[in-house]
Length: 201
Image 1 (cartoon, rainbow, N blue to C red):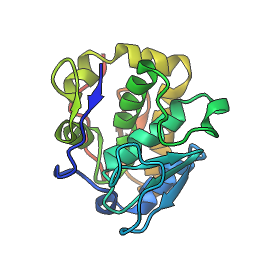
Image 2: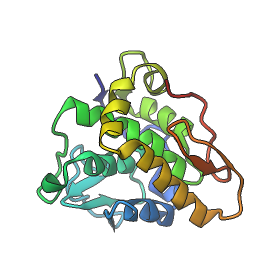
Image 3: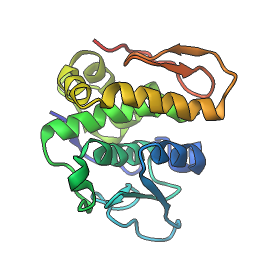
């Protein structure tokens, strides 16, 4: 079971810290529109309210102060939603606990596609923001309690696909860098992100 209790004052990575372009590149690989919201404007489709990201149809909305984990989480809700349901999504995308867990796992994996982020930092930010897990932390859940989410994503071809897409985003940014194995089955260039500190089971 995963629950979220937002903590807006937490010291977490924001979109402004990593830049718009890496985020835009990642979302584009899933045919998701990334909508830049001005800093003084309300965020359309935000379930928790500003500064959390919002969802309307196949668009994700964010401001410069939107936490990166929130942007990735809402993006992943669109990714895991059945195609026939995506166009009708507005604000609340979660259809089941299985989808919620799958979105959490996928956002951790896709954090490796964002230079300056990486899964280790994203999991720390999830804890700081108020995500709660049975084993006490996002890292412990990812390492020891996320097999159901992995199976759910794997059955839909989304697990290996996430590694491939993230690797492609980093290859555009760092085309000559060496690669390291991805725990979900692919490789990532080593520059600009944190090497995983936990491994999948």
